[in-house]
Image (tube, rainbow, N blue to C red; front, side, top):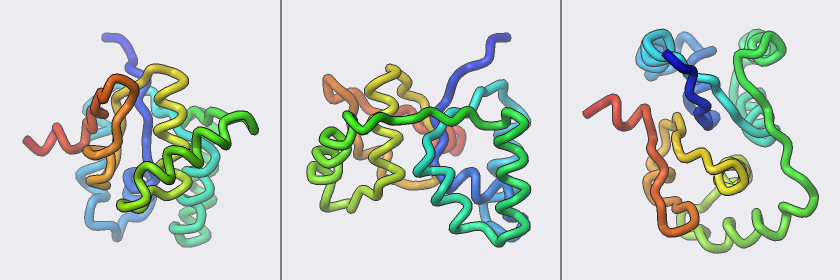
Amino acid sequence: MSVKNTLVDSGPLVALFDRDDRDHRRVRNFLESRRLRLVTTWPVLTEVCALLPRRSGLDFLEFVARGGVGVESLAEADIPGLLTLSRKYADRPMDFADASLVMLAMKTGLDAILSLDADFSVYRLPGKKPFKNLLALSRK
């Protein structure tokens, strides 16, 4: 069975490392039952660390350091695109972490994501292609 590269938003990562989070068990069980290579951005890592208690944040960073999540960089040249996305979805409102994931998806062609937010059912990739939120699909 091959490993599938999958984008990951902050919500599932927070849930995975916060045992008191209402989605902790669901996210953990989901990840244990699939072979996924999680990919995210620096803005998502920053958001996760800000949302987790300090000790859990350190555990999370250790997980990242061991390769539990691949971290992709965006370039300064991506800022105009991030701004365009943020303006396009201002009614959501799209935060910087979400914009970074949409930008990364546009650059890599990845369309599978793990998110606890409904926003990724609204965001579109080129050609009006929707994201495939694997966590949302697993509930059906």
